[in-house]
Image (cartoon, rainbow, N blue to C red; front, side, top):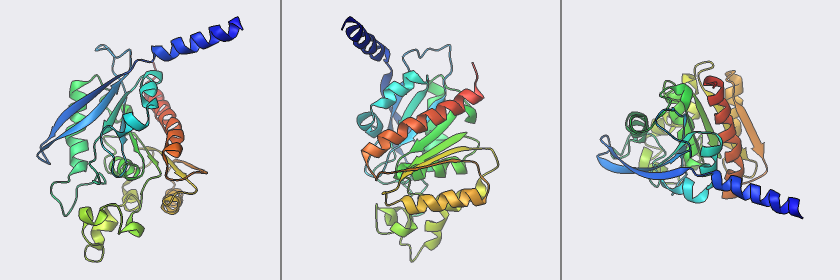
Length: 273
């Protein structure tokens, strides 16, 4: 009995040592002429004499900058466990994280790559290289993470997607997509050119570590399987995971731990200490 009590005490003590700090930032976006918010999680041992890799997280449709901290509390533990900075980005309700060709107030590729990341690098002790920078997201954010990373391989060294809408053309009536791209019958090129699948021709060999995860009961499983097959066809290295599950918080909470470990291994490979 004493051993059990001692073990429980040690577990509780170890858990309390995980004391990552969560800050909410307000960042002005010149490209969109508005203030945006982001949550930044720094590990407990964060200090100004050490530089840290950064993982950017993109929320899904109808989420916001605080979604990851509210719905996925383990990211606070991950920041400590893997000694990384985690940034939860705001993509508004339905930006889809590209620069909208029909709405000049939605320039989220420009905002993230040219405004937010430089702001984080300026104000935090980050590894200011693609070797110390990764991005992932779920659903709309899964599309956004792969889309941004493929188009900006000089900025990101690794990218992931959980249940990502990697080809949204079969879903043209959903999730405000027509507001961001125009009517698909009138502007089909907008829809094609802004899908993840269309971006694959930009991928350079061994320039981006990729992990893709989708549940077998998810409505996006078909487009994720298609993306996987195209990556195989182009001989692009990537980790691809399917397991039972749907488009749910339960599935993403499970998937997230594999994705963060994948990025930790990527950082460790590039920055051995």
